[in-house]
Image 1: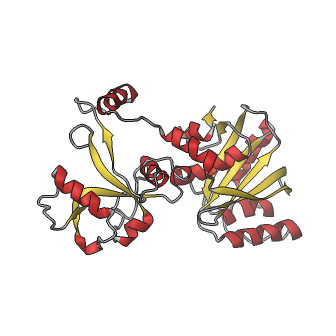
Image 2: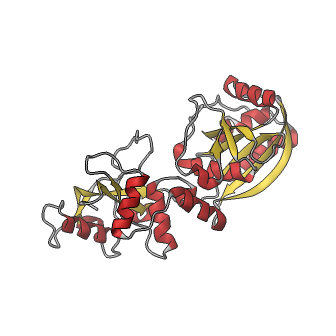
Image 3: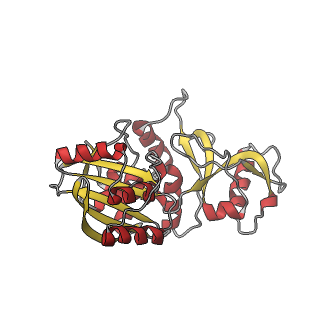
Length: 321
């Protein structure tokens, strides 16, 4: 990897393994656009490790990271190996190389860890598919894309299950509300849709990583803010569309209880102003599965910042129109 890959050698690991070794996040506020979850770098202490940077030293450190006997005190910090914390749920949660590495290890029946390195050309530029094909042939390697892995897991695994589906009335007209439980943490996510659509028809879609009680409950209570009013105006004008609410931090049962109260008694709950949180990259995989479930294959993004191409999008059977 060091000689022919040339990129930074990293070790994707499950959060459980990282916690076991007390591997803290490298920075408290991750501003990386891809939200790659680096921990503090490490080297194995002793065991013949010298500078920590040689290929042999790094190999020993990597093996130590996945050794059940390794304790936090066996590692020096900072070092020359970079662990990455993988999101639980793999590529169905976050479409990153970190999660893909963990998924491959899991599918092989191995520990939830791997080693990855981005590949650069001789001139220092990043290798693209034509160059990667040459590398694969030279070393007799297989090539697989994140899209392939997502498509496989979509056929064999799922991180969502639908728990309710019914029509509701809002100040913007009649809509259909569907609720989904995330299977790996029991969180509740919601989809609000207008009308039906044909297969392969582009559909206005908003994916919102949100504090659900501040938007969907606000909509049901009939006092949503102007930001959502504009979204509803566009959807109503088009005659169809979807808003996906990816819940970040509200207790699942609390969401269901408050939605039921609003539906059953039209109770006008006093709800705080929307925090207007931005779409969250790390949970796009959950949103993509919900979009797939409501039979959208072509997305016309409703966003304040325009189109946002996603790695692995086609693996969910989705494309951006």
